[in-house]
Image (tube, rainbow, N blue to C red):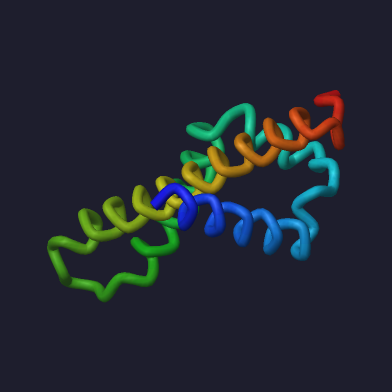
Length: 100
């Protein structure tokens, strides 16, 4: 089991390298990694408004569904921010980026 987990992790990091994951992060990526909850909320509000405005009129639960789906999108972006934080921590550990 440990061997399989290690090979999966190595495959993930190989894909990350191919996609440019060993480049130093931009200022926006640094901010997102520092504030994952804020990044999630910054994305949840516009998506909630979008879902609410595109909902069919006359349905009583349209606001509830808009809020639920907006929060799910915010959660998705927040989890992505946490993954970016882990990537930046790995870049510091490998000595590729100094954290400034």
